Image 1 (tube, rainbow, N blue to C red):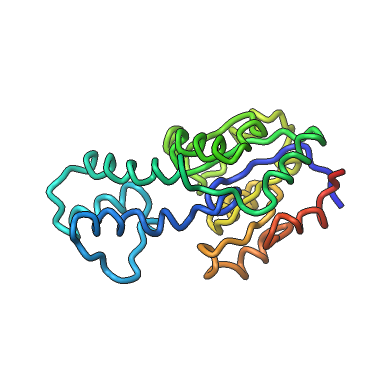
Image 2 (cartoon, rainbow, N blue to C red):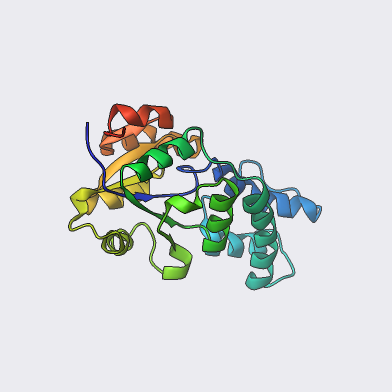
Length: 218
């Protein structure tokens, strides 16, 4: 079993059961306008910029990029402030991490104020010394530099000291290529990539109760 001093967490799909809002927010907005979205279409797979541009063009929406972004943020705000739930066992695990002296931060593609709202709502904000949003930094999790920024903030001397908790394959690939240890977190949104995630991760868990099989936490 391994000791852990430093950890970098993703939010959606890793700490919170919230990936489904990214699958549904675009379709929900269209339906509120009386427009039927195409079957099987998800906002998540396109990301902010591409997804919003696509929606305007594909559905002939009479609005600018910024206007549609503002409307989608209303849906996301309501969700993160009122609904987003931590995954089972997360709070207990973070409590044990804190008691063992681990320093923890978050890197998320979600806007920081939404991350902050979800953390506070679930009573887990106090466990993290920093939240990084890729939308604010301008670096994404396909670039190892964002992990290195977090590592330096945590005070780790090298990547091998830091555990990255992630559910997304592309981010796991980046972290592994930069020498970080990875704990893969199972989430429905990554099901097509599950076997590859298991292969790349140092450890893989379907539930936070399994983490104690790998980490030395009293």
